[in-house]
Length: 77
Image 1 (cartoon, rainbow, N blue to C red):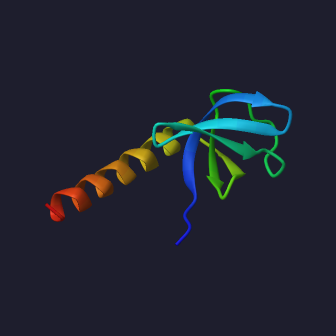
Image 2: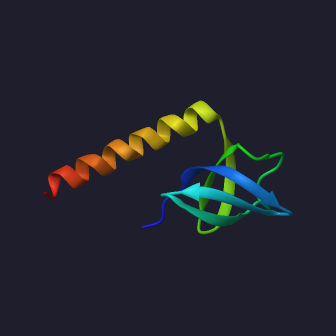
């Protein structure tokens, strides 16, 4: 299953952005989004940034995903 996740842009090189996701840096294409700058949050999937996100919304989504991940880990132990 694929899912789009929010990530913060660390740097931009042309039409390629570099985001921090799960503790690693990943390259994403910025061809589908406009007016993004370093520090912005984007939804991305399969190496493509799909949309720019409001920072508060992105942080809330990331916190919820972390809670879900923690609950799954606790349930499997």
